[in-house]
Length: 203
View 1 (tube, rainbow, N blue to C red):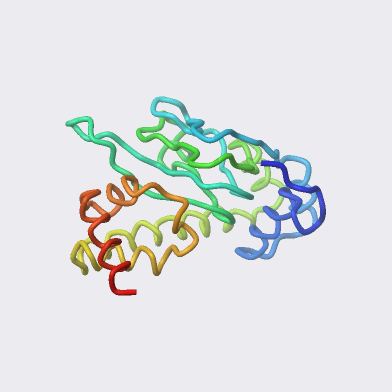
View 2 (cartoon, rainbow, N blue to C red):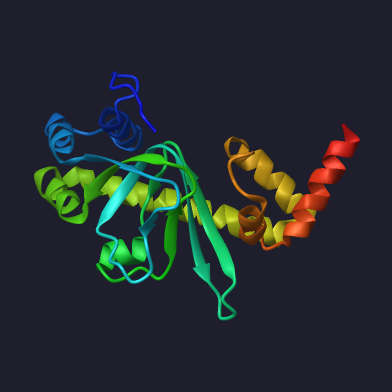
């Protein structure tokens, strides 16, 4: 996926702008990030953070779509979360403790990511101690995302979950396979197909 290198679409500057929206960064911190952030391009299907590997980087999604999933005791694929443009992804448990991942994260589309290594984030904290709040804000946002998913299960039936998913994540419509949406919402693929058929007939 090729993107023109202009101020509006420069991946590094987009990442810094995102960080700045979470926390007012000092000029030294911004300069540090410009030197340490790395732009990486990955093909669809790449396992970015596979089981058993230590998550040593956080990633800002400049373009693309990713999915985190795990396998239950029956070997069934369970989608834990999706992430698309202008989101930060990392495995908090693996990243914070530098221990192996317990889940897989794969690219559903060819993607452009901006990464920051674990050691570089620690160096940023040393350079600018208030920047520690940046990591806290990112973690809070991920926890909020997971809490919203739990609320989907507690508060809605299968059809309501799917309709709420479409309302919360309209950008994913047509970009995510039905089987992945079904496993994310803990409903069957057949249920997703039935809901979609019903919506089409009502139009």
